[in-house]
Length: 322
Ligand SMILES: Nc1ncnc2c1ncn2[C@@H]1O[C@H](COP(=O)(O)OP(=O)(O)OP(=O)(O)O)[C@@H](O)[C@H]1O
Image 1 (cartoon, rainbow, N blue to C red):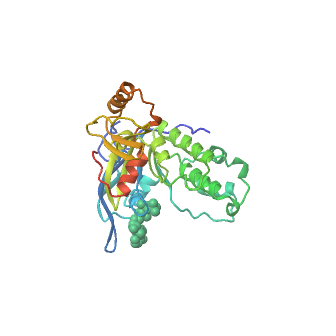
Image 2 (cartoon, rainbow, N blue to C red; image 1 turned 90 degrees about the vertical axis):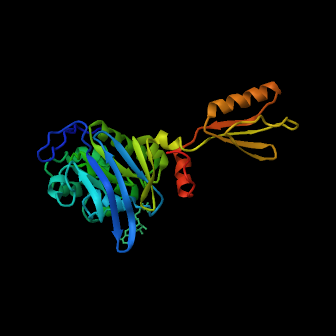
């Protein structure tokens, strides 16, 4: 699978020269209301060419509502969104050519074949990729003559992706690109996304698979009830949570050493330590065990994960740092 070349230049805004530093997507104070309901309550982020930005959050957090404004499908209730310097709704014609969108639910007609579907869409684009190449990329070349209604859920999702990338987009919005895909297909999609950004595209995606965000995203924002509650690189977000050390103390062991800043939970002989200083805590623990000639069975030390941070946000636990 490979993607052919992508142009990495950015359309200058009227009166402006293109600069390498210009973000491909700029979102400032975006709000989205449905009647009285405030689904997105003032979020800001930008995405540069060659970067993957992931919007995470539990169901209903506001991810799709925000993406629909980027896609030009809905108006912002307040705030502004720029894609390649343009308003994606008002200047739809200027943006459309450079924008690839994978909606959460697509509605392709079921009675066309896969090849006919892609051909039909390609005819509406300025500089489409060859249909055979597009199908090859998502591993659907062997299904080209099958009617869309006969495709499996995962195959249909890969067809959606082929359509989103057909026009060689420089800005790509992917709403849950791998939902319903098996692990192998999911990894293939990750490869496609990496190729896109290597070619200079700016990618925004949503996902409920945290390992996907960890694998792909350069930066992440976690949304809750329409607000960004944590943002940064995957490492920065993970680092808002403590590392965990678990072990079993042997019968008759002396009391644990005093460990400053470490939370200790103990049930019978099972011990769990939560610490923001994994190495010093481990060193103190090992020194203590060595001095008393103790064997700590089942010893495990695990750095904090993105999943831990995500769950802490979902549980309403305030992050300790951001
Ligand atoms: N057309 C609509 N009218 C009224 N409320 C809506 C509408 N569309 C979305 N909502 C509400 O806005 C909130 C945010 O929905 P949204 O689909 O943006 O969330 P999400 O983070 O994408 O969720 P998911 O992970 O389930 O896709 C939800 O409470 C949803 O019920």
